[in-house]
Length: 249
Image 1 (cartoon, one colour):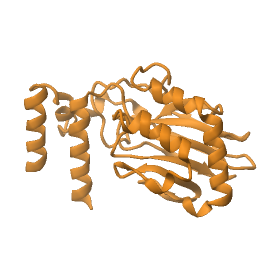
Image 2 (spheres, rainbow, N blue to C red):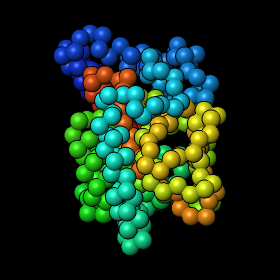
Image 3 (tube, rainbow, N blue to C red):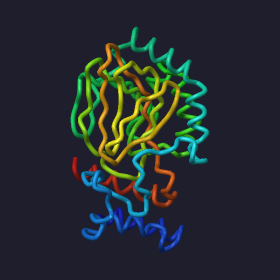
Image 4 (spheres, rainbow, N blue to C red):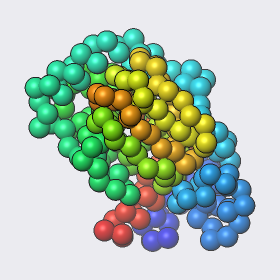
């Protein structure tokens, strides 16, 4: 670790206790964690020990996340209407989605939150989703500042190849906006279909998605801290991953 990370970790432990970052420090150890991973989690770069090995999550099971879940679902109709208007009339606001593994032209994104902050240009384009995200994810601090929130639109015939995301200490929330027949997602070998207006999770386990339908498939994706992480761990992980990204350019 760098002196800056050491200093930050020391400050967190001084405030929250000597053991408050034990799992983060264990994650950084060069040996001993591989055997704790699920086989379909092997390709993830960072696995925080003690996080339940659960590929799918009940969206209503976590009190910390429930206000966001309910707000998104109750505003689904308006969010969908605004997204459809943006797709029809403001297509220039969307861009090719740049996953850390690949860039896809047939996977379009409209970002609401990116690089640790809301994207103000998106507020007039998707005002309801922007407001719900700001009030129920950003302000309470449950959104992961290392990642993002965006409307994820797969064009007809597009697919996302099987992959694992970088780590297990955040989870990916999907609000199904517009789901054609023939669209689906597979996580850890289990295939499911989205239900419009409903939310579900996937993440560090191997997953893929496809749209074999005849029109676009759109979900609103939000990257959230895993509810089993603690506030001091979240602070440490934010500093750690930001520093690693800086060093890697």
